[in-house]
Length: 422
Image (cartoon, rainbow, N blue to C red; front, side, top):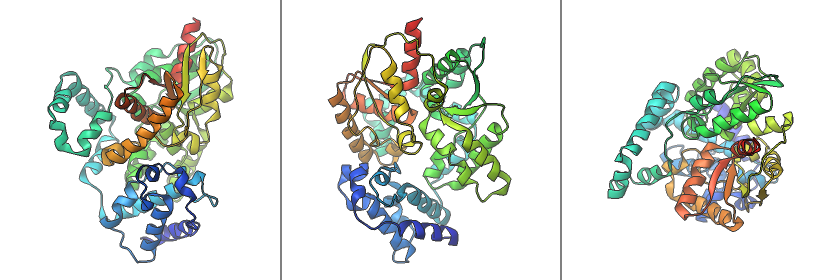
C-alpha cells in the first residue's frame, strides 16, 4: 500500500479490539452467519494485509467488496471504529494496484460524467421494457444466462417516460414572495427512476416560499468511490463543485440520501488538493437533505387528509451518516389521517447499497427479505423512505414478497397532503 494509506489504515484498524459487538448491527453477518462478513472479521483481514501476512490481491477482493458499507457495525462499536471508511480505503488501494473491471471503468469514466450518454442508456432500458424485449428474456429464461446480473436486473423498476429534470421544470411555479432560495441537486436515481419525487419536491418547496434552481450536475461520485475508483469519483466531484460553488443560494438541497451524504464528504475528499480544498469544504458545508432543510425552515401545516397506515425505513446515508432521522418521522406524524407505526429494525440496511444486488444478488436478497418481514409486521399500506436507491430495493422486496404496500418518498406524502388540502 502507499505509505499514507497504510498509516491511515493501520491507525484505524488498531482501534478494533475484536469484541464482536459489531455482529448486532451487521446485515451481511445476520444474513450469512459467516464471521469474516462482520466488521471484526474484515478488519482482521486488513490487519493481516498491513502486516504482510496476506497479499492485497484478488484473494481478498470478495471480503472487501461484499461489505454493504452501511455503518451498522459502528452503531454497536464502543470505540466507534469506522469500518465503512476502512473498507472503502482498502478497496481504493486494491484498485490502484490491480485496476478495475473494464465495465466499471466504462460506466464510471464514460457514462456517469456524460449526462447525454447516461440518458441514452436509460432510454435504451425503457425501450427494452416497453417493446417486450426485457420481459421476453425473463419469461424464456434467457436472462438466467447472465447469472447474478440477470437475476438482479429484476430489481430495476419500470423506467418513466419523463426525467426528473423535465418534471421538476414543469412543476416549478413563480413565487409571489420568497422566504429562501436553494439549488436542488438532482441525483441520477431521482432523475431517471423516480422523477415524481423531483416534481413533488418542487411543489413542496414552492408551497413554502422557496425559490428553486435546478443546476446542471453529474453523478455525485458515490458509485465509483464505493468500488475503489477514487480518481473517477474526484473527477465527477470537481464537475459538481464547479457547477455549485458560487451560486447565490441559501442552501444546496437534495432528496437523495446517498448524494447528500457523499456531497458532505467533498471537503475531506479534496483536503490535499489545494485548487479544490476550500471550494469543496464550502460546498459540503452548504448541503442539506431536503427534509432537514424543510424542518429547519418551518413549513405550512395546512395539510389535507392522507388516510393511510405508514411506516418509515431509515436510509443508511441519511439516518446514520447525516443524523437525519427525527425530521422524516415528525413530518409523517403531522399529516392528518396518517397512522404512523415504527418499523422494527428501521435503520438496518435494506441490502440495496447502490448496485450491490448486481454483484452480490443472493446476499442482497437475504438482507432484503429480513427487511420485508419487518415491513409485513407493521401492517403498513405505505413504506416511506428518503432515498431513490432504497426505494428501488424496497419496491422490489414488496413485489418479491407480494405485499400490499406502496413505497413513497416522504416529500411525496407531504405533496399529497398539500394537494388534498386544495
